[in-house]
Length: 211
Image 1 (cartoon, rainbow, N blue to C red):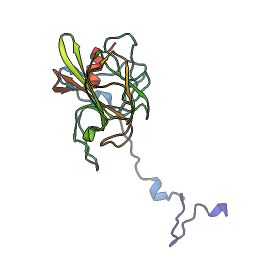
Image 2: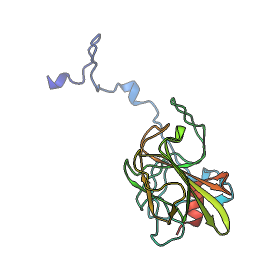
Image 3: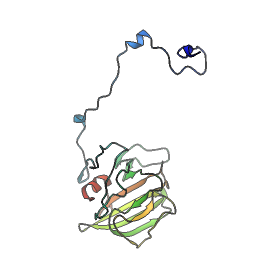
């Protein structure tokens, strides 16, 4: 009977989903979580300050929009409205062997989404089998007279459109988002290496340099 829905049946394996609240429970103090923006500590990443990407949407972890301009010399790898995942820096490991210090920025726009080169450059690595990186492409750029490398990993097998030695333009599609290598879900792992060797926060670098 519907009237029995709130009744508790002792010893029954499938207990009711809801029940009446007792008088003693009703007097228990409530709990709340206050998000005080003024309490957030200031921080910086490498030589770039970290900030919100201006796209009309507030940044939140694992859920951020990023912008791009088709004629800019440095561009985001995806169109506006794409989402981001794991950030650059320390993080918890995972059961399949993920690193505890993340050297890149993860983007999660969906499996099969085309990936664009962040700047003009020359492909120096391109492989469908690169260990934990899975499908990987590395492009070398000259930005303000400085060597910068961008590394793209975990891409879809068979989707690479460029080989070693190829010249690419900013915004050119190089492969598609996949789930290859050591990966917990479809995403692009993007690294930015100054002087070709030193990893910096890709989100901060793109925020400072992309058009």
